[in-house]
Length: 274
Image 1 (cartoon, rainbow, N blue to C red):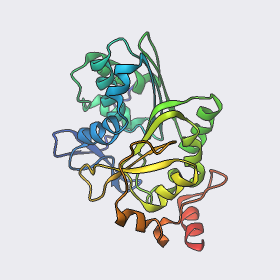
Image 2 (spheres, rainbow, N blue to C red):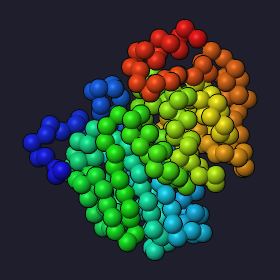
Image 3 (cartoon, rainbow, N blue to C red):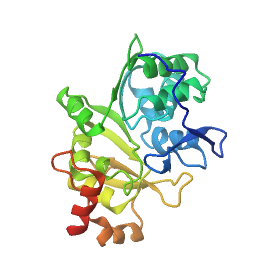
């Protein structure tokens, strides 16, 4: 599948760091923080998952990018890894609902990277949904992430870093449920790290219910910090007292979707009834 120059463009919005983001009319939200889309990719996801340090120690790295979107998180990750270790072999598995999003980002030249190799990789991935080269093996799974992740789990894929970047829990509870995040956790290596911009108590409860330890991360253009999760509570930034108390409130009731097929409205209704 190739870029379709006739497809209607998404609403393009500049952010404070000079990068651009799109607005989703379906979810009623921007894809990134208005304070800096690419900065958010670098700090919330790449820095939090310690990819530079991993690249210094390993010659193979696996990334799982959930809600790939414009491709900023993967772009920032590849740039950091290959600047640190040019010979590192990277495997990327990514999930994206709408393939028009990364294609439009490429068509409008939105990917900010000094690396021609990264720019070429994201272009090929957006166009062909897969890459197989000496340094990069990548697959972009298109469609409902709840179905696509079952394929990923079935393949036994394990990631050093997981970027969890759906639209917000109130807008997209399907991808923040205990059940979906259980599949996400199944793709995390024993030494891996999961990062997300969300600090919602319901999301943190879901991660805890799946056996992960959690910590708080730096807020990037948002009012609240993000969340980092690992299998072991080793050097995780602690939650504040306020955040810990928040986990004891009604807001911490998690979203549930046992069949991975409920609508957003059904998930919200069931949560209210708990």
